[in-house]
Image 1: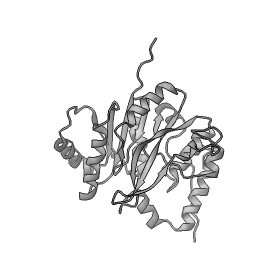
Image 2: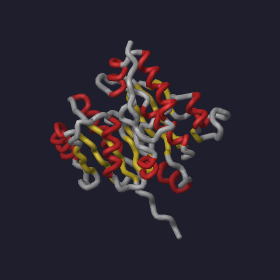
Image 3: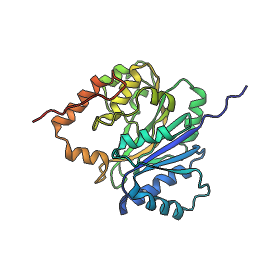
Image 4: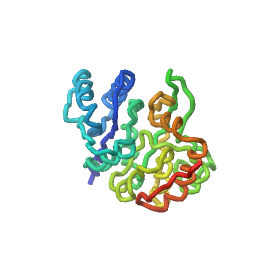
Length: 267
């Protein structure tokens, strides 16, 4: 019997929209809309103050299927990136979900490749894209997540394992596709880990022997250094000592599925 197609939801978190980020938001949505093989729905998780603006953007872009884009309002006082993603996952009924950041874009063939890989590798818990990193002028900077396809880099070519992660932390969940059930059962993103929350999550998943694979295609474009972006904010708020603290913290907290109390060191 032919296996039923697996459903995929895109989760796009938004806590504020400026003139600049509104235009980037439009490009993000267009990168979903122009997929050769579209995901099943897109959940836009937002704070109350940006709901009207989001509705205006969707109306302006004149997308055909209004049910494809669903707004999830976050009325809590936790509107950080991790909390927004976690809320979207809780509201999703799809077997898989993918994370789309406000100022990023998917390649047009990304979900075609994803669905082919889900069919071929149904045991995989997380599919990472090869990410093209660009600056604010869209000039190429680097690739991310590609290194595990180098011979001898990881225990198995194409797969990310715990020992490789502990040795080399520079992997990203931007654009990643997760099995929803496994993401929830392993504790989701930890909202109290700054800067290295993506790294801690990958460590936790790998430590639980859930397989992580990078799809060997360029699938996601990530903009670095945008003023006001999450990691730009971290760069301004966190000292080098605190950044190192959270990196080291991730290497101990991944043993625990639930968030634990964290006390930042006092300089």
